[in-house]
Image 1 (cartoon, rainbow, N blue to C red):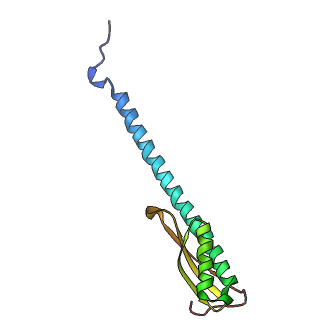
Image 2: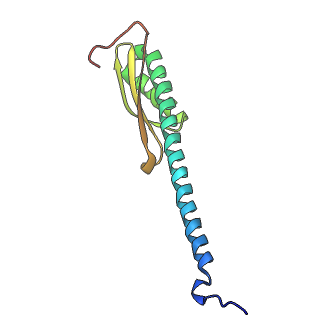
Length: 120
């Protein structure tokens, strides 16, 4: 005797495979987005650090020149300066990097190690 297979189950494996592939695609997209956000954060951090060091190194030339140099250094790192402030020999730079959906801002401070800013 032959057993009859119900026709209602035919093709159900195709549906399950399609659902599984869609889920894998969503997870893969989320991992890629998270990687892009982390990369933007690292790029902004590196740019902020280097730009703050450049501005602190040229503080004697005035705020305008020091911050212009900080902007140039940040641009070379693929970021931009959002804020640049000099407090004497200490520079404080905020740099931003990344696409609009994954934009990250990082603040860095640089100056002589013996100097401290109270209240900043």
